[in-house]
Length: 198
Image 1 (cartoon, rainbow, N blue to C red):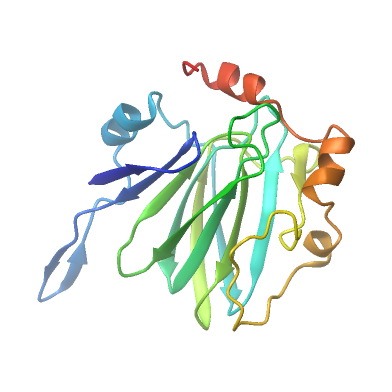
Image 2: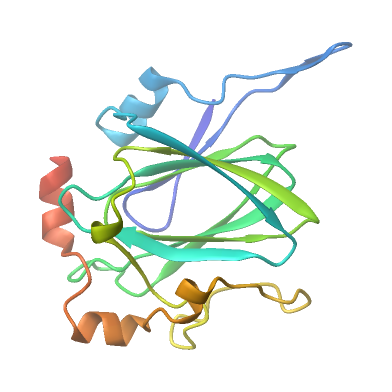
């Protein structure tokens, strides 16, 4: 399995070795020892979510209060998505910046997103199925969002696809509004919660 750190601290891409034969393909989509060596701590799985979305659907930018936050290991089981991570951690050296990775059912790559980072994706094919391994269960009172079409973020959504948003994501505040209302997690709190060295 190939491991590639993202441009933002707390993001890693995992690309498995595909083993095709006349029956199909076999791969190891998650390996705890590889994950722990790359990230510096284990992944404590508490919940798995699956979403099915049609072309142009954008889900996010979502995040959870830290502590405990919600780390995610995201994979695209069918179709193709543009997966975007936004650094919303106040005090981070990359605050307000984003990183984007295409996840596909051909590469079978996965993206790990640490606690405190904002997460969103766009469906690039007619139908996509996305799986998320989560370090914490869903807790509505701790879940928040930022507008995925905030002009200040300028996220790299495709211009040739009509974007579809939920009412909740349409109504989400901009990054500046979330910052002004002290909704965003602190970089120091996120790092301390994970116990990773700064």
